[in-house]
Length: 89
Image (cartoon, rainbow, N blue to C red):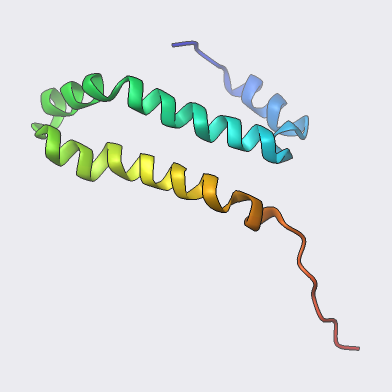
């Protein structure tokens, strides 16, 4: 996996690129792919480090990340849509 420095992360954020909805969706999809592709390694690490079974690991760790990312993908357009606000004068 590629190492990224804090300075590089700050530079990306300050560039404004992270505000783009398509960039956010791409990142969420990449997270889903990363977790799916490495599920067995994650289970093995959680077993070695914490003694968690694969079922427990999925329920408490992997499944939560997948569900959260999937939910975020499905709601992102709504979350970033402009909203009309009534101003009281």
